[in-house]
Image (cartoon, rainbow, N blue to C red):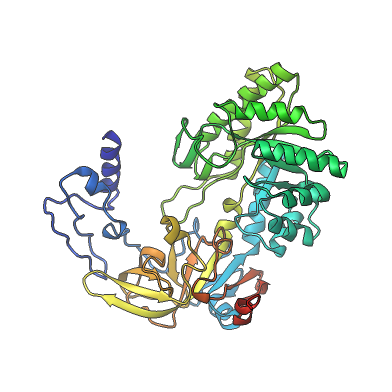
Length: 495
């Protein structure tokens, strides 16, 4: 109950809503004014759990402003229109069409360099699942980072551009025999084992091919971190990893050390996603250090590597917290050093796996507005030419985004809006609640920030919509790095 009151207090004090004495629902105008009453009920639980659509966001002071923390580093406005990488979005839409994924190459590369500098004494492996294509693999290689892959397809993309196999790590909770064999044959730098079955498969394949692959054990450390909170107990109930508390991780160590075909180099953990502090990592590091001590005591083996995974958060809307990469690096380094020195162990080489925090803010999705439908007394529905097929995150788990009118500036008043897609689903939303200018009209371009991670990766052909092109922009130049799909592509493979 105390948490419920806390949540309620935060919402009221932040202006997200207010408790009403009436049980009636006051409708919200499409134009900005103070938010109406929440859908009151007889219990506080019901009030605090009110639907997000009845808690509209704050009205921005200026609808034309691009919040620097949310938009790509080279973005701005010129002549009223948004520019990215020195290019007017109107020109991008005219040349490449919409919907369109736009990637700020300099933003992406600069974040790679920041991670590499901050973790100069360790390793940085980009998490390919965030967004991968051949050109991105080249950027990662050129910036000196490693690459984490979790399927044969992601591995194939990396190898197709000559990415050094020794700087690739293979993840996954259910790697097939074929995927493991491909990894063994190509000599990937590390394979993170996730089950006892996988240890046996790897031992067999290593002997078959006469190699000794380096492996790490993914340990479920009993810590789950998400955004600002972490809980340090009872998170063994998941598909990933081998339990520390249940003894599975220790047993995995025994089985690997019993196989001379495999080289155990370290431990791996991943505690969550969209994390904005290092508290959860501290708990994870302490528990992994305890296992390192136990391994030394039982087997006389000192493991030289420790991989604390990724999950570092980014701001999607104004007010979201963001992490300073150097602060992350210094904090993790201090944590690992303290716990290992206290345990009498040499400090292992530290590896991190950022994905979203490199790719996320470098990407923007550009849409053209189609139907603009005012639902009197509620809001205006602005339909765009894409939707959940190019960004399923909002429909999948309620992700929030920032979007602006991008093809021009406007001095019109703010209009409470819902940015929706064209799919045959009522849950097809790109941005659930936002303010757009009241004079927005069909044909206007709308840009959605923070779409560089997990949007193209999770894209689908739902309703047989072709996937959008991906265009990289830099220094006034634009080039396609993934071409737009066509109807012929959709029909290919069908008999």
